[in-house]
Image (cartoon, rainbow, N blue to C red; front, side, top):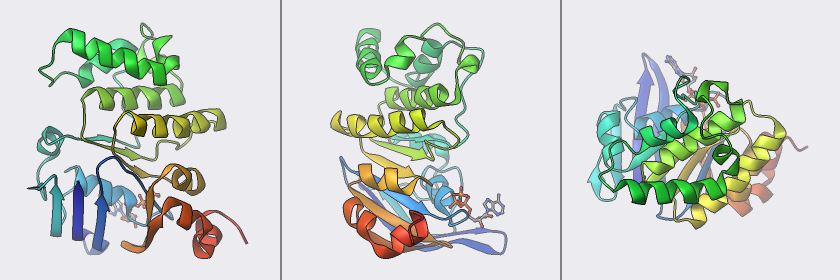
Length: 236
Ligand code: ATP
């Protein structure tokens, strides 16, 4: 579905991506893990068009999306949930979700039906449909931006650090939700500091170090890998 080949990016003179190649197949959950500053966010932002790479290629469902601006990448069916988790604070939860469906041409009934199905996975939001989004907790805001992205009906959902700064109970909830979204047919590319939980839900994973992919395998094999256990799972 997504093929990134030999991607290069620079911040001024600093090479932040040094020939990164990565693939995501339809229906997969793929996790990208690595230390702070490895270039994970930069890679996601190059894919979603927020940043411009300087060499390489990005092909999504057979279309070259390399260098396209983010609104055009979104039209090809890639939705990115940013680390910053921006909600519209003065709008209600439901109004925020409806913003995600803004560009869809489907009927209101169809979209309402999909919102109801998503509420089965995110019951916490259903209870809060009329609450102003700015008053939600951090974990609830994370769920809201995930639902808003899902209701845009993306072919690929990109999540940047969904567990960042959340209380353990919310982290567990987010990692329970990811397999359920996959069961509903979503394809997900996920960046996480929380490597053990990310690899546990991922079909495949990539390890990134200072701008390069250094290791790739199934999520299960990476969880067993000595180097990964030592460097990213905090084991001796
Ligand atoms: P983290 O897990 O800490 O979010 P990351 O793997 O997502 O890290 P990036 O945010 O992609 O890493 O950063 C990669 C490198 O690029 C880092 O060395 C960072 O300091 C640098 N960098 C990121 N943004 C900028 C910027 N706007 N200007 C200059 N350098 C930047």
